[in-house]
Image (cartoon, rainbow, N blue to C red):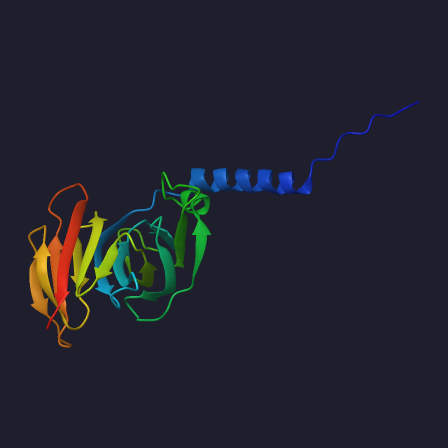
Length: 212
């Protein structure tokens, strides 16, 4: 008598299937990620480097959440990441994960080909409460930060409500395309800030030149 042996699936396919089932299960259970009180500060680094430091403050408001996901914008190279709990000032643990992990964690519509900073909160968000965090990272993006000769341009669609762009030392503002406030900081740098009063992104453009 001959017995027919069942085909054994490839181990990688089994792992992928289990991961998919896990993601779907978590996604069905995880509440939608919610947040509030966004503020972003863009500090332009050395002209010609295409690098700018981003300091992003946000309040996580999803009741019971133990993690918060922050997207890494496509086309930007992220380095020097650090995350802090604003209540204590203590650093928080984090990892860079794929979009499918963020989607399973409550970020609806997260693109599986994108990357996110997954922050481990210091404590679960209480019901009706919040957790304020600060994300510090540096982006390199030649499409957003251009420099040539004695001039520079920072152009970037900004969707959150409160934003500031800080010019390098020794540069003065020559133009901005949206009503903004300009002030000089203690170290001599100029900070250009604005509040987005609409619901759409502001295609913000800041132009500056080196002081002669």
